[in-house]
Length: 508
Ligand code: BES
Ligand code: MN
Ligand code: ZN
Image 1 (cartoon, rainbow, N blue to C red):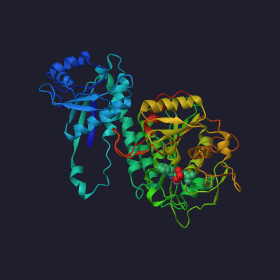
Image 2 (cartoon, rainbow, N blue to C red):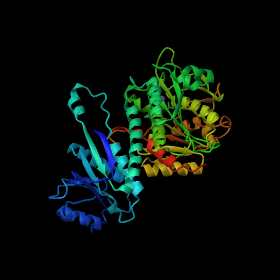
Image 3 (cartoon, rainbow, N blue to C red):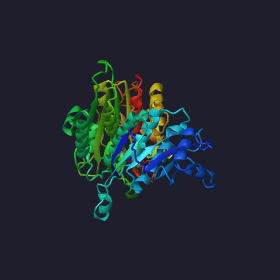
Image 4 (cartoon, helix red, strand yellow):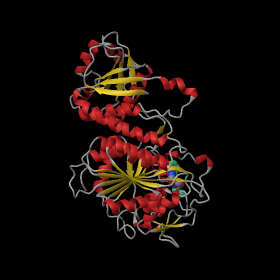
């Protein structure tokens, strides 16, 4: 890992250790600027392009060693111009970062605009460079020990040169990348350390750093406010549950402007409770990723000083087996007076989100609500693990969330939620149940339907009217293999999407 990455528009007089360019497949003739560059490099690029094995396939990175002008030339393949997505460039830049790190390079010069043939979006390009290098520089080695001591000792910094039109946005990209990496670090922190208390402390100190208001409803207060779901799930945990509230309220926002409310599930470890998960399936430290995405997004929104009023709520609890843990058949009463029988203690995420949604909509009267949660295994069965499931009751909100996801490379796909789904959850001795016993029909939608009882005043008896998006990120919050600029482990899915969405927010 580089200790630090510095973005600059001042170009060093000395020969660059690494020059970074990119090419599309259709480019049999080099763009003018690259022709000039290649001349300075002694023609290595033109020569390489004549070879049979030469390829600029999507995301492929080739390293050439020019005889003059630069020590190394990294060429990012962008594939076909027609199918280009910024994710290809993110992958390429991620690979370049790994390669320069291995080569102990400390200064790189990027020259990527020419590939776009005069139609370059400097802001988007700069943002992508800052974001991708920052994301690819993520490592989590706090818990590497004596075996890896020498790796940890290596300390290098990287300077990245880019055109001055790209500098501001590159810095913004790095800010969002840093916030994503913060979410990934918290997500990766093991459950014996990252308990609800730890998450609370992290939020307080991050909020102090970036200027967010942070208030915490502790479990005593939660009990007195009637947050029966949050209290029940957390009562067997090693530290008590809490509801963390972070607020970004820029001075310039109109007094009557309604905020946007983000809500994220932070179950620091999910054993399933008495409905215990089978041993093989119990790696559940990533069950806090929805909450970590909200924490990262709030950091980014504050650090970018976005002119939008945003509140971030993170209910956090540990779902454990204990003499005082909640049981199947327990009936809990939530903040908004809805009661639910716990038919399955493993459907715990919806219980803690329920109180956060009911409390948040009543307290902040938001113009829109977006919740993120690793809620169901069923969403992965339905959609795979490269996109999140989305339930959105408002077309403008859907457009904003979807567009932000496409731009950030965090994809989502919409699924339905109808009254019939709500009806599936009717209880015998309670209003509703937290999951249909033995019925996996519409599995991820059952989760969305449960949450729909808690969004806004009308929610107990009718579909929510408050614009609301529920994102089930169970499949996307971590990856099993490297997918550069991301490495195996937590992805921080949601941070970049939310930061992008709030950057372009249009009031609903
Ligand atoms: N945290 C899990 C969902 C999950 C599963 C996330 C796999 C990531 C990977 C959630 O709390 C859960 O256990 N959901 C149950 C719901 C069921 C009991 C209604 C599930 O998906 O099986
Ligand atoms: Mn569970
Ligand atoms: Zn869970």
